[in-house]
Length: 235
Image 1 (tube, helix red, strand yellow):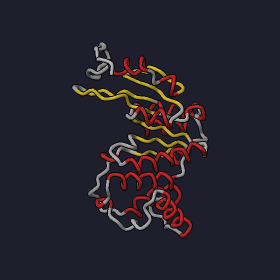
Image 2 (cartoon, rainbow, N blue to C red):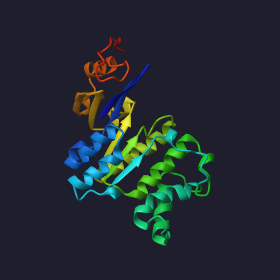
Image 3 (cartoon, one colour):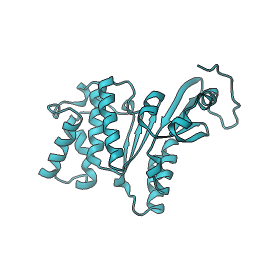
Image 4 (tube, rainbow, N blue to C red):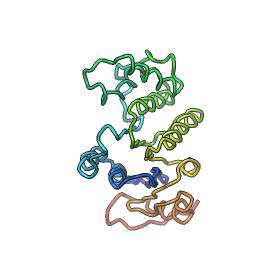
């Protein structure tokens, strides 16, 4: 889906949220809509009422890296291991099977040998790899990614996009908030374009048209319910 985000005094490029919508149940679509509004965990409780087959452990969320306190004294292994808490509980022991899963997830994102490194010593790309490894360990049906490729190197982007394709092949739903329209066009089959309200939803090639993107960019003023459109030159 594509979400054109507005804040007072700032003009943002169109933002993409691109899930595998064709595979989404009604409950998952509801989660997607609430995730766009930034209230994902409210959605979780609604999902439990709407679809008893979709529980908390079926939803994984990746926050923006900027929202994570990198000064917190935790290393790579322990942060990735947090993805297993649904299976082992807050105070459960990490047994050999779970250790193998943790090491496997770390290896999958290319960080073998980094297990004991504090997250404060990681680059932006390495930190994002760690967060994707935690998602792998969660093994969820619905994966929500908030700006997963922002400010990281191209090699890391390519490796993490490959994981998104892997999840898609495993019939999981991936909902990603993105600014990079070229990335959306190449890798996400379905898109919702929004600018305070939905503009278009469907196949990405039919949604990200010049006309739709111009309309989204015209809504560049303060985020007010009654605000009128303003004129912005087309790129």
